[in-house]
Image (cartoon, rainbow, N blue to C red; front, side, top):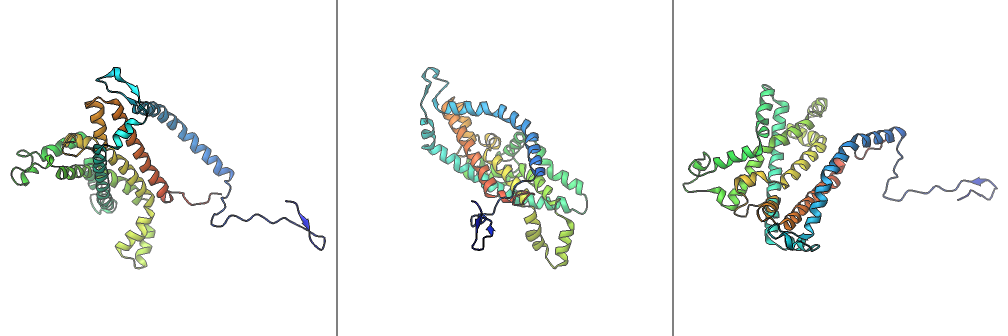
Length: 321
């Protein structure tokens, strides 16, 4: 648009286009910010290339197998059937039962781990005496191999020999019943991985300035108010990372269930269901389909966390000049 003369003959500049209502104009990045972004991509590039090279082929091959009828017991009957395997799995009650068990274990274990892990992180951060000993003792369960820990829980709940089973009425075998076994699996998960949650939360606690907490105390804030109104908001990025890591890990639970119940009595997770089809039934088509569905579910969980809670990440919502 060119400048137009007004009634007096003076030239007026064309009006500037106004930004659309409800949307803030995005400020251009400075040269320093662009250089920092390029450096970030360069530093991440080797790891990204290696991860793609290592994971791309198995993912593509699993997707290809999921589109075929492929049973190792009948290799001559292998054929391409498109999405028929997905229809079979999604119409199966076994899949939905395993998915329900997986979601229940994931939600309950992650919530309990977050609550207990926060308490452990506070103890490790503000312990007055023996801080190093306290941190070492809390982190011991996380240092034990998961399979070894699962066998110890299995022994503990074995009737007649287990010290925990002896606390129950005679003849009780909780690992042979669905819901008692599920809660024991959750207990084993919480015992094993809560230190990991506590370690992540401790890293967030150490970033909170002590001066800020002292200022809140001077202003009359109670301990609970300082925790809920000062500490938790500042720890939001760390809590997001801890929840994301543990949710993804808990959704793919395999080893604890495999050792404790082997998926019996409707305690299968989706990973156990995929294992049974791949290595027990030797049905590569159905097993690969389940693996692809688990991958899609994990990707959806990660997307929801990042997009839904992404504003909690450090540096979000800050204009960089």
